[in-house]
Structure formats: C-alpha cells, structure tokens
Image (cartoon, rainbow, N blue to C red; front, side, top):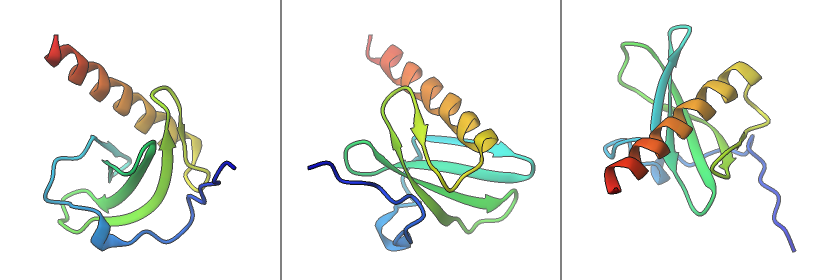
Length: 97
C-alpha cells in the first residue's frame, strides 16, 4: 500500500528545527524559502519575508533526488527549490570524496 502525501496538510511548526541548518535555502521575489529534512523522502518547506526572523511552514513535499513534488507551490518556486536541492546534494557528495 502506497501512502499519499498531502502537501497542503498543516505542518507542525514544533517538528521543524529552525536552529539546525536547512538542506537548502533560496530567495525568490523578496521571500526566503528553506527546505528541511523530514522522514525518508519527505521534506518540509518554510517561508519568510526577506529580512525577518520568523519562518512559517507552508508545505510538505517529496524529494526523490531529482524531482521535488509540492502541489501547493507554484512551478517557479518548485523548480528553483529543486535546483537548490540538487546543488546542495552535489556539494554534500563532493565533500565526502
């Protein structure tokens, strides 16, 4: 049985550690987005206005190492986060070599 991920489901802000470094972080049109690791292929996506200190969780998504799937986010945001995740993973693998 395959579980379906509802990326619009409410995220529990207490389950995300904003003190830890994010997997990836980008700024798009004055908004900062960060991706934090979850369980397995699930990631948490949060957003804040640039220059502010409070992150707000906005979506759960799936990252399979190539594609980011987050139905509730627009394509420009998803594709930018996808590139940031790919870059972060490439840097991580390169640091282990």
